[in-house]
Image 1 (cartoon, rainbow, N blue to C red):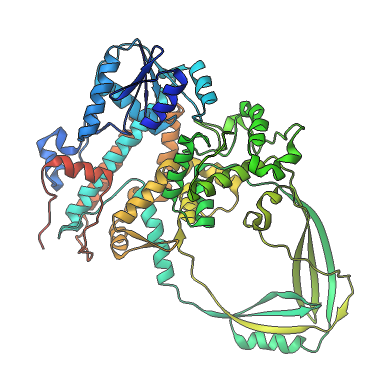
Image 2: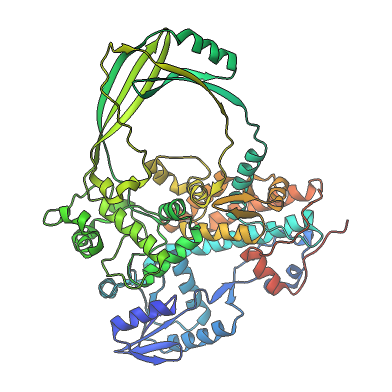
Length: 618
């Protein structure tokens, strides 16, 4: 019997239907020579510290660092999990072939390998199903092109390395800082990704809080109904601005130069998970977590492709499928009609196999939507419009720059006229968030006339708080502000966390009481600020350090770096960190409210350690 195992029951149902396994049993489907079973997400997890040795059950400084000689896994302590695991183990023990149908990514591979290891009964060949959507066509194609599971060994190693690194840093640093600075029941939750993310939010919150607004004055003038701004027209002293105003009030305004330049603007690239989360936050105020959960539902409804992706490109083999997908988008026929009956443009901004790793960009599958709720409609609509836009012509525009003078003071204004909307038609008046057109009258060099100058007082503004959108972008670029999407694509190698984990990190920080969501804004709490103030170690809160780790983990996935080298280097840095913190002066943590949630590492530790954390007496 061939046994297929998926990550979720809903996916198992889709696969069972395609394979003809229609007989329902307790924990699996059967038929046509197949048995299709499932996990419940994770069935296994890493040992907690207390599972290795009694010494690690107690939160004491002299037990740090805790470094297991070999990391071990155990079943999650849940009645339903244990029951389903026994079903899987029994099926595996009699299987002639096992097909790993886990989610086609690093986390999915880790889940499946741990289940196989924990059963201890796998003696038959194991193959891997690798698909980017759950449509019947994609599943049939996937089963016709199964690969040996061993082809994905590096993917598993990268996931296992990530899990070990998170355990080592999370378990040790959480205990280290809690013992040193916690007390009064306060547990300081520290994580490899969450702490540098918190550090960014704390830095921004402080910058806003400590910002001192300062007045300044600008000089401009209105000529023929158009506002011209002085090139050097910003003044820190009001009298200086008024002096300039007095100098030009009675002098004529003269047009010196008119420059017209035609340009074109390509459509935005297809969505990866982060880009979609950013847009959903900007347009609808959705949190990153809400967008991911909505997208997961669309994937399981077979309407969109695999959600947890970090590329904005399609592989070349998808090109032939695109005309059919466009034709299926019946609600968008006014935009797709011009594309029908002619070859689609094959742009390198869309199709680039070399830049596709586990999966291609998020696109519609071509299935007809049915009974979508409002959130699903919004997310699906964005994906469809973006998919259509990349095949439409560039937006053509003309930019006019007018230079003028009044006495010896130079003025400037610019205007933009859309000549051909191209891809912008898909977004209507929204125009994908672009600046609205500013149409200028005809100006000729030498034009001269009266004008109305003015001085306006303005005030400097503080940095804007992070939102889910801007924080996700900062995590993607390791804290650096990068507007250009092409450059952001290059910097993903050193981003903080994986696209699939970033939403979870934000929610963890909120549940820990370290940040709050105020409307769309994310702001650090007193507790969060105090935690970051205590941590002086770049190993824990540096975006660059965490970004380098992410690059190394990707290299492990590609087979270009060793798991053993990564862990050995991390342990070396961890030992040095513990030595420094142990010898550092103690400080009083003023925050007294314990977090309502602890990181997975702390949660696992508290569940298994059978002891309370050490609390330093005052």
